[in-house]
Length: 112
Image 1 (cartoon, rainbow, N blue to C red):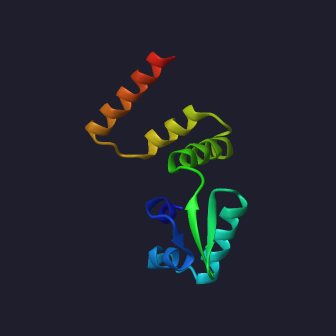
Image 2: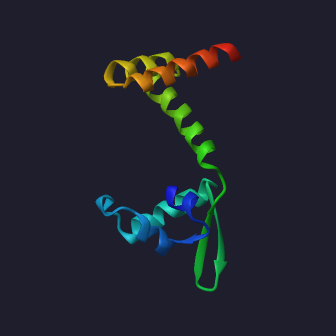
């Protein structure tokens, strides 16, 4: 999806070329994944001659929000506070990062 968000419309060949080598995904694996994204209506396509050009149907922000919610439900039973607690216990944070998190919590508290 990051490739499609970054540059679209994009062909399957262009997507394959953009995927980092460490993933070691075959062309067929990428095409299977593309087909799944089309079926889930995350991406759309246009046929141009013999090739297809793909474009996003959901924004990166929408996808991150949905995946984050799904992750919290699956891993932490929907309890965001448990996720944050776990994160804080197992992550080294700089003073600046701590201040940013504190400000985010204050802003969230103000919004109710």
